[in-house]
Length: 248
Image (cartoon, rainbow, N blue to C red; front, side, top):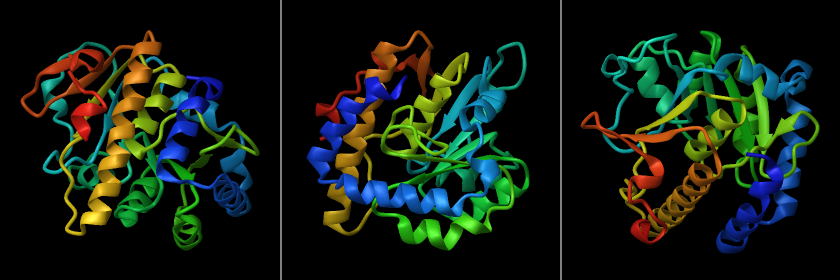
């Protein structure tokens, strides 16, 4: 999806959750200053080289999901690509899987992302108004291939092709660069593991918007997008019965 089609949805998200665009811009400026020149060069083309034409598993970090069970896939052709969303990287690495691409706003177990990056994963660091400290702390610890993204129009080598949370942003990215099929593994829009009720409510609100974002993508794109459930069944996301109301 192009940013121009995604922007109205993000404006609704900003209004609902109270994100200040000035802080988003400041975070993007800080990320651009931190990333090496190679990370700002042709980010979409480099990601496309890893995902285009391949079945791509976007791995989320829902409670109890673990790494994707690749042995259940019997499709012919090249092995599926793995795109890990932030904290899901840890379960992939523990299972001996190196993601092709990682999308992260650096609020998960970042050490596993640094490790995967050293082993060949391309890490897309996302800047937003609340993670400038994490970007400053972790940004220079990645030694492998990097790219950057933010929540506004593509600029200065930073990409934005849609999506809000790490998981749905990964699906938008895979769709944009030409993945053949997208499987969503480890996605749960209802369960939140968080003792603090205020933080839990905030996470539920974000999951509601993630569900909305994926619904919009599945309706707009010709790329098949399927929810891959823990019981092994795969169902088109648009037919999975997930709605904004079901995540409240």
